[in-house]
Image 1 (cartoon, rainbow, N blue to C red):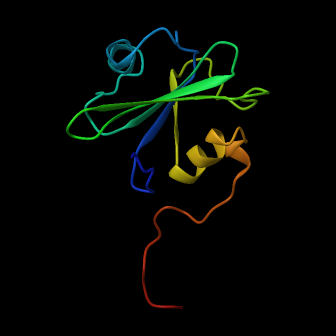
Image 2: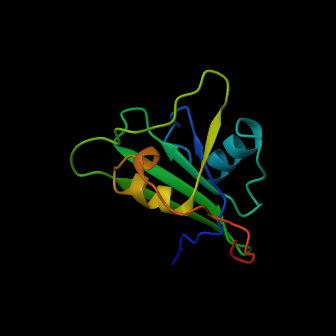
Length: 120
């Protein structure tokens, strides 16, 4: 079982992916288009063209996980848009919202890191 933790680095591909691709095809997309090492522990998130499904690709140190979620009705309404960037990073809590077909940009949470020091 794969667990999404706050320490995971998550990147969402801006352009839709060809969902006929499996692990090797998506790993190639990670390396060539997204410019990230697919073996680096990142969680890669892809969407199909009709926005009805997402795939996640993760390497856990032993092998790849390929997760596929297809909505039974409706579409993933939110997806990053960029004129120049091929990907957008998300925090773990934002990925949970995205996988529930929500809007990760509308979610507010505490910062991932904040310095600890004496109170002023």
